[in-house]
Amino acid sequence: MIDKIELHENFWQGKGPSLILIPPTRADLYELNDYPRRFRNPQAMWETEIRRAKAVTDWPTDGIPTVRSNLGVITIPAMAGLSFSTPENSMPWPGKPLSMKNIRAIQDKNLKDSEVFSLATSFYNIHRESDETHIAAYLPDTQGIFDIAHLLYGDEIFTSLLDMEEGNWFIELMEISLNLYIRATEALKAVLKEDSGTMIHGHATEQGVYFPHVGVRISEDTAILLSPEMIEQSIIPFVKRSTRPFGGAFLHYCGYHPTLFAQFTALPEIKAIDLGNPEKYDTKWVLERCAETGTVLYSRIAEEPGENWKDYVVRIGSLVVSTGARVILRPKVFPESREECREMLDHWHDLTM
Image (tube, rainbow, N blue to C red; front, side, top):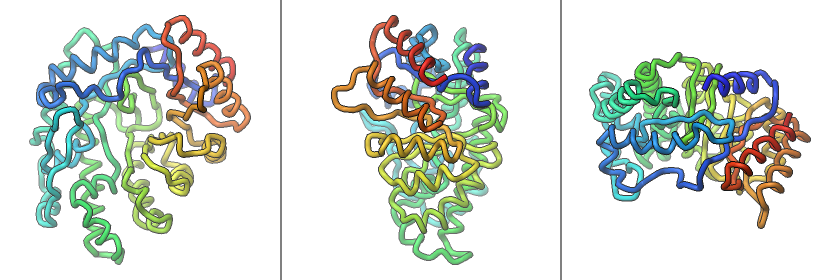
C-alpha cells in the first residue's frame, strides 16, 4: 500500500501521470446476493467485502485495495432514527419520513447508540483484528446535507424549500442535517482512527484513492431536481460548511445537470468530483471544466459505441492531455487478462505523464 500512497501523493501535487483504477473483474458495483442477512452480520459483510478487495491486491492498477461497511445511503439518517428496510436483492430502503418533532430531537440523540453505528463499528473492529490490514478500510456511505435532509423529511422538503426566509423550517432542517452530518462523520472517522483531513476512499468499489488533504466524500443526488438559483441559495452554502471541517470533499451526484457540475467544480472545497451518469455529458466539456477549476475528475468516463480498450485509452488519454485536466479514471472499457491490464496501465501512464 505504501507505494500506492506515494503515487497518489505525487498525483495530488501535480506530479506524474493521471491515475487509472482497472477492475480485476466485471463484477456488479454492489453484491446484493443474501444482502439482508449480511447487513446485520458484520462478519459476513466483512468476508464479502474482503473477498472483493483481495482480488485487487496484486492486480495491475493504481487503486489501493479497500473495504467498507456497506450499509447504503441510509447510514447517517438511520443513525439519527430514520427507519429503513432491507429488501432482497436491494440496498437498504428508507422508511417513513420523520416528523418535525422527531427531526428536532436528533440534536439530543446519541448517534453511537444506533444499530447502524454498532454494525459499522463491529465491521471495522473485525477488519482491524484480521490478517488483512494491508487492505484499507474506508467510511460507509455519507450523503450530503440536502440528501440527508430529503431522506429525513421526505418529499415535503421541496414544499418547504419554497420559503427560504431566515428562521423558516427549511433552514432549520438543513441546520439540523448539517450538525448530524458532522457529528456522524466525526464519530465514524474516529472508529477508523482516521485524521479529520485525510482519507482513503473506495467510492463503493474494491479499490480506492488516498486523499492527503480531504477527509470526506459526499453525495448530493437530490440537487439535480433544483434550479441553478435554488442550488446557489440552498445547497452551495451547506456544501461549503459541511466539508470545511474536513479540508474539503470528494463529491458525487447522479443524473444530468451541467449547471450543477459547473457550480460544484467552482467550489474550492470540492477537490474531486464523480459523475454517476457520465454517458449523459460531453467528455471534453467535463474535462475542460475540471482543468479550468483545478478539480480532479475521479469518475467513470463513457465509452463510444464499439470502442475497444486500446481505442478508449488513447481517446481519453489524449483528451486529458489536450485539456490539461487531472483524472482518476474508472474505465468503462478494460481487458480481462492480467497481461493486457498491465499493458493498459502502462499505456495510460505513458499517455498522461
